[in-house]
Length: 252
Length: 88
Image 1 (spheres, chains in turn blue, purple):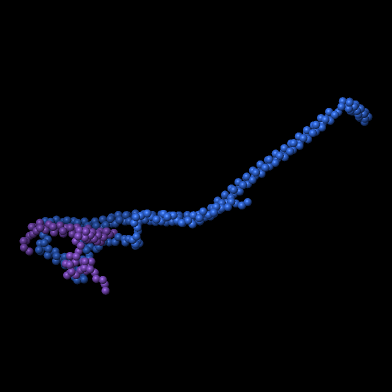
Image 2 (cartoon, rainbow over the protein chains, first blue to last red; image 1 turned 90 degrees about the vertical axis):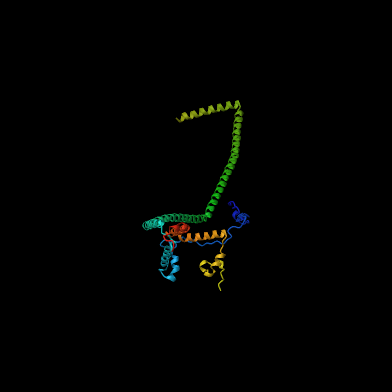
């Protein structure tokens, strides 16, 4: 008995069809992402700002004057400028000058004293911000890595599907076989029951015929014994019995 | 032979002293141009002195000093009267 034939492979037939029209088509009115993508990484923030000397004058100015006047050039320029402003009273020395001097002294002292501490505090705040961002990035990378691993494992698992299908096919074949055999047994039993019935019927009929015939024969024989014959047979029996008893007496 | 750069596209430091007048005349003085110039200047200063990891005091104090000088220039006509000598 052969197993039921396998269904012709549906996936291959489906794959041979042309792909549907809507695959890969994004419905837009204008083309998107047409410019050339720049994959260069964003440059990080510069570590330190532009150099500033004495907190007021950028370093570039000193470098600009260095070739012509050397190191002291800008300072001479500053002194000359200051003397010019004072002598021509373009800068007027009045009460505001005294106020400015006091304020500047206090400010410079405060900066010299508390500057480094404030800088360290601000740096610590920045560090914390950067650390949280980096931690988030690392977490995301880690999560994606585990996702990749899981995906690979799933792909490996999917390779074993042939075994699964074989086992399933075996199961189904066994079910079919079992079912067939059960029905076969049922058929056999039913046929046997019918045949047994027929045999029993025949036996019964023959037995009944036999019994009936024996009874009829006995009845007819009994009926055929006439009273005359009955008397004669009884007298004969009595004579036989007397003879027997005499022989028995003699034997004793 | 390097391509000649137009006067109006040259940077300020490359302009010769004699060309300064014509270079200045060629600059964009429309409101959009002025706004663009302000924005460019602000971005240059901001990205050089303030938008850094360890910014120092110079970035802010230079702006403050500029403001001080500007306010002194605006109030000079009022400060003139506190001069100690009349003739210099």
